[in-house]
Length: 318
Image 1 (cartoon, rainbow, N blue to C red):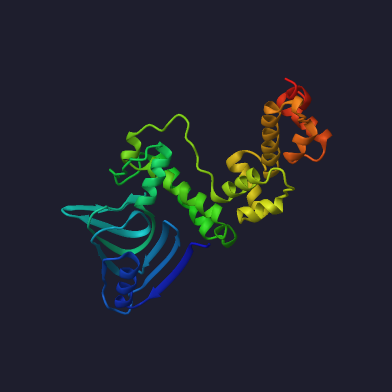
Image 2 (spheres, rainbow, N blue to C red):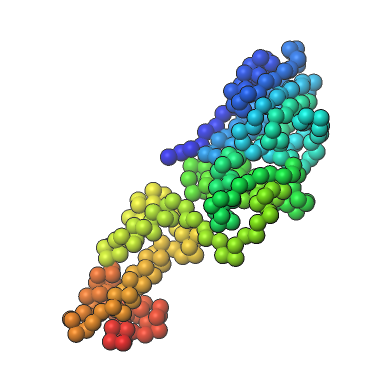
């Protein structure tokens, strides 16, 4: 299932600009001078819980926008021109670095601006933070508008750059695993780079990483079909991912190829069967090897000795 959606809009009509921005952002109003030089362009890419937007206001044009209740976490960065954000009595003029937009009602003014915004679903980011901290009851609250320091700003820029590279490359964007990893990288960068309640909690010494769906599906298929003939085509079909992408995913998340994972799973199953077997009942190395997916007894013996430092026969009679 492809959860990537794109859109683009360009107009010289202030009314059209107001209607489009209101529809995309929600509870937003746009005011702009109605003259011939008005120019406004908006493009966006939505990938599940993450959205990337670029707004361009032409020379001599001004767009004012009010947002009552932001539904997402928005991090803006001015590429050119000027943008000012008002919240209550506070006024902030954005510089060249990333800026975490207010979580409450605000108004903004863009003057001849080229602006990018990365927006993330708050609940999704909170769930991601809970996974990293291994705290189910964690509640995320953002407490600052700028990154901790210049290095943090650089890490955020790297994550956003990778996200845009993925979204702008059709071959990469079409692969759910690649999109998901880019999304998670941006969420992780947000949590580490901007002040929030996340940084008040130490990360556990060992963080359990949730395997991506395709890797999990392929591993489950292996566990359920150990004694049957399995090749890469079978695993790719079970994972619903092209074979070469599945190989990359296994290497990234499990440090092994699908074939290596399969061989280890079969050896592990055979090892446990040999330990529980009883030669007096007629249990044999050949029968156990065959049940665990090793039709070649000689190859099984070699692989087993390499893995466990003893022969299958020695384990059976131990």
